[in-house]
Image (cartoon, rainbow, N blue to C red; front, side, top):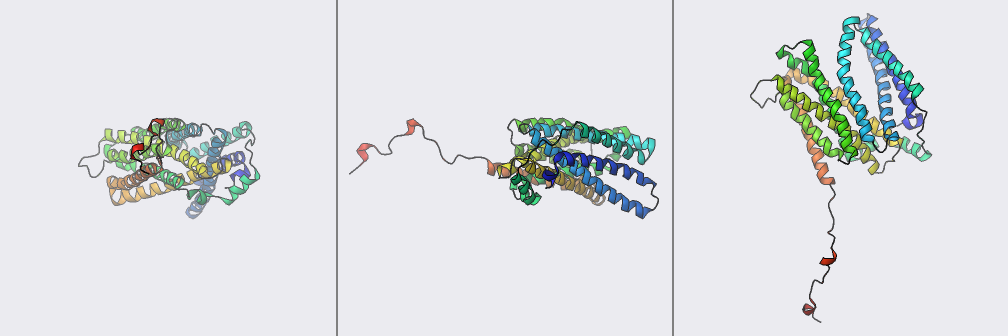
Amino acid sequence: MYLPNLGPRFVYNAGIFVTAISCILFGVLDYVEDHASFLALSFAVRIVEALGSAGTLTATFSIIAAEFPESVATTFASLETFFGLGLIVGPTVGGVLYQFGGFVLPFLVTGIVLLVGGIVSVLLLPGETIQLDASSVVASRNSGLFAILKVPSVALSGASIVASSMSLGFIAATLEPHLRQFNLSPVLMGFMFIISGAMYAMVAPFAGFLCDRGVGPKVLASVGNFCIAFSYFLIGPSPFFAMDTVLWMVIIGLMIHGTGIGFSLVTAFIGALQSAVKNGFSNDISTYAMVSGLWASAFALGAFVGPSIGGVMLDLVGFRWGTLVVIGTHALSFIAHIIFIQTESPRPKYTEIGTDDIRPLLKATQVRA
């Protein structure tokens, strides 16, 4: 909402520095001995870090939409590829750093890397090139997340983002306990977590390419939701199948899961942006900021709900029955997308008549005075 007023470049750089400093401070909290103080400071630092991360993420998407209006999907998908690479590299590098330096080192290294990246962005990122007129600034103040959510297509995209992020969180929290039965080595266990992120990184650019070539975002989102729901039938497998968990089926399921996430997350952003502009929102940085904020908020909500539900369901009913929650969520999202596609598909309201079809309905001999 305030990004157009502050400027995306300022928000982007400020967010990086806030995130970097917060990350370093969180690692230093290991030296706090009092448990109550540690808990309180941890909440405070992580909240500030989340604000910085949200600012950077929102500004990034806004800059993309403003600077690459003809290829938003492809450019956004390219960034999502690096997001997927982060999902792959983060846990692996973090584990190695933890072994060498304990709790402090992973956060210290991450914070320093972010600081270096922030300094580079300040030096290389050009100044504010996005100009806003007065009416656009006023519109950005008077409209917000709730206003854009009144558009049904945008709300559907937001729900799809929440569902996809929830699935990522569910897998992150429950996959390791589910795979303990195979007695995998730490290396192989880490490889299992890489599979979904790797597929996501590979599929995201393809999804963006299809969107820029005219394939409907809602069509691709429906494919993504179907893939995610189907993947859990293999990862579990579904409790309705009288069979034990098989490792090769889990691997295939994780590959399908990453594919579905790639289609769903990329197309949701593109679909929400297109729908917002189509329904009267201005095609400028103010709308880009709102859609970017929606994506970031929806993803964060799913990232919170997914592990929470996953942990509870794992304790209560186990992994296989717990997956039914995620399957049901994505099944509902898939059905909603199909209904939307059918109701929004253009239908001819009349049939054009060719010159050969223009003839009197009654012959002259049939016309009576």
